Image (cartoon, rainbow, N blue to C red; front, side):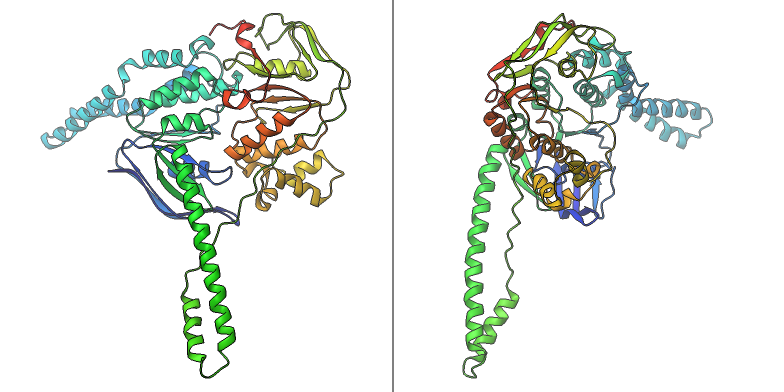
Length: 518
């Protein structure tokens, strides 16, 4: 029996079509991976099925009494909300049911026998639901999940706006798991999560009995938890049974078959057109020519989808810096309270270092303290000579209403229009993306715009804070290759060992220096 039915879905933004006549079914127990390049419409699809967006055409039908839980890539946590408050809000529907139960109890006194039977039946149903969803042990449940995801140590009274990107993701994930939905909808849940909690989420999804739809560009993670792949490409949605690796094999064969059929058909069309042109003027052969023309007119012409531009990143190397890039002297990082012990670190020319550790441990804070973007609590950081720093920030807050072209022009005013468009196209953005406002782009496309700024500037040291978040497989591969080829030094924050292991020659584990207890 299908839990979710999507029929003839068509949707677009302005003149940019996202889906064209797409149909989709979700069956009980299916573990689905939704894959596709950046900007193909994966998050849009999730927003449509959850009712946040109305499609241009088509219908979305859920089964009765199905509760869907959605982990949104762009969910907003407002100031004033505490961790405990957000987690308890998972039980809001149950609190409403409890309220309804109290209303029924008040009505029972005045009800006639027939009404009483109906009310008692409704009361029994609500009580069963409350028991099923652990309503009577809310506090213990909140504490249990908060402990599993390392939120208890942060304090349940802590304001959510004080948290790092990873910690906020954990809060939203914990809230979702507390809701115990019949179906999980997860939009890039591994972004901002550290290795330990990615592992925990992997185990959770493997044991998950109900259905889920997962959007992710983390291929090892996808491979382990899904059994069906839906591939989104060229406004279509295609189903493949098996994991991601199996999908790639089948997709490659399918693509090769289509290209072969296209070549055969083009050859046939060329021969038919040639015959018609040569024979339509002669009386004796006109009928044969007309019959071939009819065949041409009726032919269902195969069209190959236009190849999407694959991103190509090449970092420019500037002048050679001094031997020491930076040196810290008893540096203590943090905001209101210390996040690290006094640090005496140094980085030399040619080093490529990965900075790892759990969320909230202070990796981003350390990076910003080295750059002088935030003041350290004590100690100093001395930067080397002739540094040309390239900094990739993890998250850029606020709505950016400038277009991609304007964004690059602000950074490089000497560029011609052709150079701006060419630079963005090399990062894998199409003409429609380039002319759009940055805020309407997907997370991966926005990351490509920021990378575009970075690769067109001379640098000799790169400080990269989670650059792989939101990026699709092709973009990740290209970025990895670019970092391997880069002649300068790299300090990289990353939670994907598959990515950084082939790039860096040293790993710094922040957990050895932190003052936090996890």
